[in-house]
Image 1 (cartoon, rainbow, N blue to C red):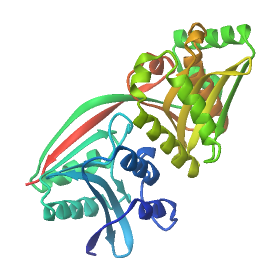
Image 2: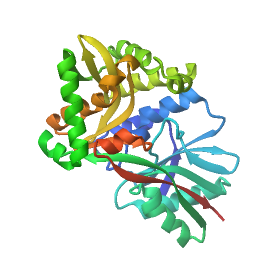
Image 3: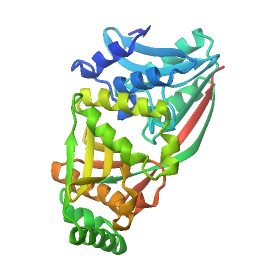
Image 4: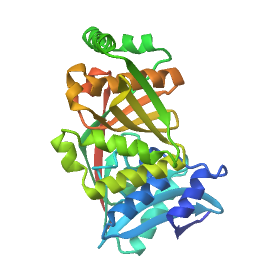
Length: 327
């Protein structure tokens, strides 16, 4: 059956996300239509939008969320705020989708695909590269970064058993010391679009409090992006805030997104004057415990090799970039 390609909007992609008659694999939160739309709107890249949707007959077999500059195409998004990127493809239709995509890019005069933030299971690595080589294109892939994640068992004690003896001792010691020193409370809330403003205000306050690097990162534009992203993800039920309180005061928060049994730890913040009580790390520990109780299957710490991720049982996932020269 022949394939057709159409250029569409973020709004139509949102309909495909909720449509039950499509069999697309949305590999992570970073390729969901609300995320893509917020990034595009907030950062105003000087590129051409290429939202290509391929069909066999009436069935969608894949979506290419790309942006084009001159004769080069890359994913919508940037590595500073988008940890994983990929195409959205219906399983089993990879060959048909990527071949029709290459044909369409060739007609538009695109000479290069420059793709980054690829997990090992990204279709851009598992299928696209091989198809490109079959067509005689040059393919250059390399590791670019690392992320960490931990598969969660069904009980807290089983999780502790996954840690090394030293890691397990440190987790228990930190939890005990915090409990002895203060009136401790932790909650993880699923926030709707009407509530998100207040939670974001508190999160941003903690985020920049005494942290020079974080304060420099959180520019006016970045604050706007975080607020718009939180609202958009709350609207589709993916946003969660973890809040650690001491004596009823918030001292640490996590901003996470939940999708398909995975909790993505997007960012975190804490009150520096409580650093001696390890409130930053413990906000993640309590978050993992709460996720286990709710049946979450995986905690994804996302990009970066920070020490606490290893201390909490994280295993490395190598991220790659792939450059394909289209002849």
